[in-house]
Image (cartoon, rainbow, N blue to C red; front, side):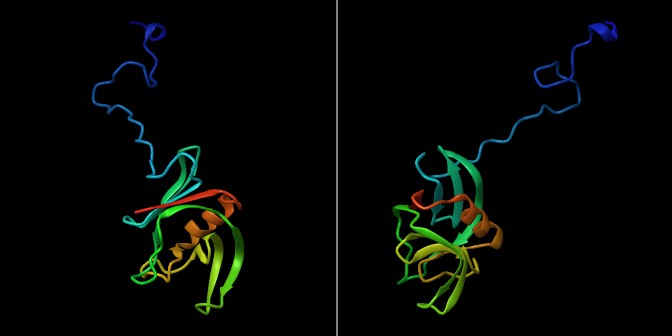
Length: 143
């Protein structure tokens, strides 16, 4: 077979001995409905950002409420967000705060320890969540 007759070397082309096939990675899925723009799974300490049921960011690590201050599961809407918020209740700063259930918000915080109900996030995760969500967006929290 001359070079002009050779099969092209691209996906869908011929198998080449000794070269592994290119297998695309499985899509990332989140345990929330297609309506959710943000999805938190408490049992795995993860958050995803979503658009029409497809994950656009995540999973990113989180921590949530400690015993006596549990973060409740449910479907909520983003109420408001503040780039810098000071919690008078806990005398602590909450950077990139996105409030979705009363005084419960996502924000930067140590993910190694549980909170008083808020969702603590890494700086990158909190910033991505803050930038992505808008008031009124659906926020789902599942066990």
